[in-house]
Image (tube, rainbow, N blue to C red):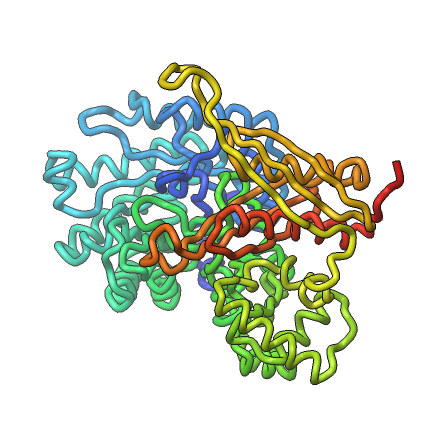
Amino acid sequence: MRLSRQEDRVTMQTDHIEIYDTTLRDGTQGEGIAFAVGEKLRVAALLDELGVHLIEGGWPGANPRDSEFFARARRELQLGHARLAAFGSTARPGAAPERDDNLAALLAAETPVVTIFGKSWMLHVREALAIAAADNLELVETSVAHLARAGREVIFDAEHFFDGFRDDPGYALAVLRAAEQGGASRIVLCDTNGGSLPEHIAAATRAAAQTVRAPLGIHTHNDCDLGVANALAAVAAGARHVQGTFNGWGERCGNANLCSLLPVLELKLGYRGLGRERLRRLTPTARRIAELANLPAPQRLPFVGASAFAHKGGVHVSAVRKAPETYEHVAPETVGNARRVLVSDLAGRSNLLEKAAEFGLPPLDAAAARKLAARVKELEHRGYELESADASLELLLRGAGQNRGSFSPVAFAIQTRYVGAPGSPEAEARAEAQVTLNVGGETVVATAAERGPVAALDAALRRGLAPRFPQLAEVGLTDYKVRILEGHRGTRAQVRVLVESSDGRLSWTTVGVSDNILEASWEALTDSLRFYLMRSGGAASRQ
């Protein structure tokens, strides 16, 4: 049952914040962001599980993908909490709403909620629409009314509201009144260009609250890096409906990041959006959505990034071990994240003690901790990045750097030659690698050929170990990064190689450093396989 406007206004004046996610529409307008239809359906299901109230699925009729999404959503999407919204614009100038294709497509999507935007800045009315101010007001009112008469809940996005309010406050507010008269259930104030400042957002929102009775919402962009701050300013001024995207994705510099907005509203300001229990799903949801977009989860995002609760300085780690609140403004578990202790040349004994505990090792005595701290500082000085290579660090802490354990590398040789007639289309370089290993006191020699030298090295290493460690067949490389250190040395520069590996369940990273890229790769590759065998308890099988 639909609330009356009076009842609706009272509801939205409480400490509850209505969360409207536009990742699947506005978020996909960001550079490099795209979802297939199946992925959009999975993202919508994730948002529903998290507790988002409204999910904007796209613009039906704008492209085949969004049209297919809404068709499949009707058949396949079972939402237990959220409501789905279709997005579009007011009717075209000169077209009656009843005959407008855009509005017809919105109704055909059969979503319970429809969101349409209209112009609230005279610049756009004059230049983009090229119509009279009064005609734009009529477009807004009649478009909203047409959708409302069809039984849809209508949210009106006042596009460029804050720019319009600066230019002509009377007209910008008149647009809001027209939407309300048409029957809009929510009126959303949009900082479409992302150029407003919090004090202007607050003043304009207060003016809007004095003009219309419909609940107000806020939609901000991040072009001044103020998307979240501006949304919070609007909430302080009375808005109770907040729009944003996950991971801050969106056109140009992105939208207000819900991954920051949601915990600030709940944990800092005492509003209820998702609820504290659901908020614990925030980090895994953000990372899963990034994975569905085939993008790495943003490392340094507040609250949900892997670095959000990462501690590197020895003084910080020592304090956090005694009282986490000394360097953490909220507990990481409240947003589904976890504390991480990094070990680098800034590390002290506390960092190593914390990492040893994390790896399940017995506590280090003072002498061992000092010795290891000195070793870490030396390695970091040489270019190793142990904070990004936990597997290499664990091998070091376990003493595997000296005791090679399951196998030890002895030597490798690589030869690259051209195959085929020089200059012919069939000609290509082929690398042949030979590795010598010590496995349980036995010398093993293996060779392999691949297109590139590192691939050949990896293949030869696996070929030599496969008969004795068949479980290594489960391990594959998922990332390989090379960083040039001291580039001014040119081709003699040190290189750092980071190798990420996975067996489909566990992922780990190892590092190698040398002024020979193949030697650095060899170190990282061999340590990766030794780490897996150590973790899996692998022993050489007898053939």
